[in-house]
Image (cartoon, rainbow, N blue to C red):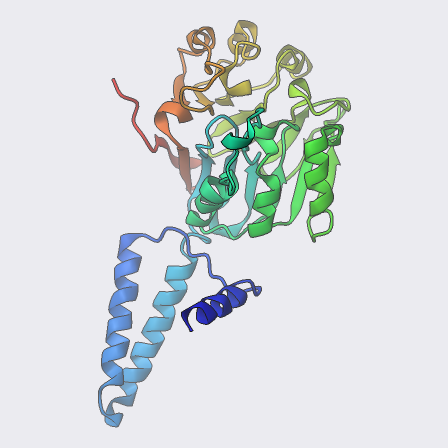
Length: 350
């Protein structure tokens, strides 16, 4: 009977609009909901003459449940979260009051040759283990856009698993990314869903906006889905100008030549801090106040490179390998004022 009940529950959970993604609810809302639920149960035990109290307790329970289940989804705070996906990239941009949720890259595991005995029967999924729980903790049950910078596994390997659990309304990637066989295979399976698939390229004549927050600056021509073909995104979030660089390498210098007035406050360091990116010339030009590095703990590539760290030492550096996930929250105060802050999940040891 328990097995039958469990299977029925699983079948019901697959129905649309059945699952409610509440996200991580603040303690005060949790207490309000629990107290209203207890009060409602107590009024059910009272005699029929107390119908007004029952109506009041029912109304209170409904209101507290609505607040409880929708707080994260319609939170007044805008957020950027660099998810700790190990050796890879995945970044959430969540707009306040449910105005939009976007994911830049999905992370993914790079496959290395292994012997048969080393292969797991049920390999763990990065999407199910890290990305999806992080999205749901923020009350995100669907994504307006997933933007894939390029076709490397550590940036898009978790895409297919993600779309099986989270509704993706639009998938955007640079022209030429489909040259990567693994990415093409994932996209071909997603094509059967309701997801709108859009290949994009930056314009040399005008700004190519992908949403109300971000615009594409690179690539300017079709590529093959390699590092230097990475989609570079730019936009103002809070009071800061952000640059998301994927794994771009030599293209950095071409980027600043093409955009001589480029203002950058927050830089997502390209290629996980590899020496092939983040040149001294590039850093001297943009002079970021904050630099964000997404890389794995004790990774085999020794990212981030010590020379790169020296180049960006004048900025405030946050790294997922030492700081865990990196959060940026802000709320608009007045016409031009912002209350905003960076905070990492872990503090780097001295």
